[in-house]
Image (tube, rainbow over all chains, first blue to last red; front, side, top):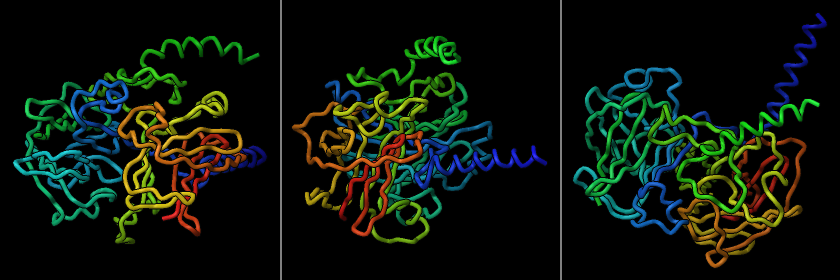
Length: 188
Length: 210
């Protein structure tokens, strides 16, 4: 009994410490946020005076982990709108006018979603910003939808990644997770 | 007696990890590294973008604005947000193992910390126009100078006072607890909000009028 009480006490102390530790301040997100620029690593290039191209785009997204789960067809259901990340809706900002899927996109902030299918994904650029997840996704606020084909990654990607890669006509936004990647062509 | 025994392997560990502690592209900065010193080398499982050791986070005003918007609890536009990376103590003390009095600090890690203002606001009587700014500080024992700077989309901190937009002073309070991860949030007040900056046992509040 004494042992039990002391154990209880230790547990209590542990939880009190936990509460005291964070108070009502936000704990660390399980899916940490990250940011990618085009040109890649623009902030570093800028401070080193090595930026040879002007700033074009940036994405801000949270990075869910695979954690041994089946992602495509499992966690991410086919045919459903997926927020391409976690927590806050994934945001893409253009600092100059670009073209995606044959459509002009003005400078500004947008949100990014995907509908995942077997052989292709539909990528969606939507005008509703500063929102959470895709729970209140409204297709009426879509700016455009475009199809991209699936590619296989070389190895398993543990944390979902969004990265820009230079192309002859602009850049691709490369989205990779698990064993799948897609590239969204951005022309400027 | 235990400490010295641990010290040598710990030192060796740190040295061996030093080469890959941050992204390969990280420039050498004149200031001490404020990110974690422990390596998280996952290049083998993510060739696209490594997960940052000091993860990024975002805090809105009104607090939790994206969730309020999702729940249809607000239709008004957000007023402000900060985007910053969260270094952690990992056994160190904020003063003077990570920061030093009088030495500018980027209020985070990795990319320069950013404050986005969605409308014109007033801070300590100074009008600030809507827009994106870098936010950094110069910590002192009793008060911190909080600075908005226009050199956005940059890495770390290369403070150029010529690009400063405004400087404010905010008092330091100490707490009994130690907060592991550096934290910035907007805390509601009767007049608007405080931008609360907290790490270890230090809290600094900058009042903002919306």
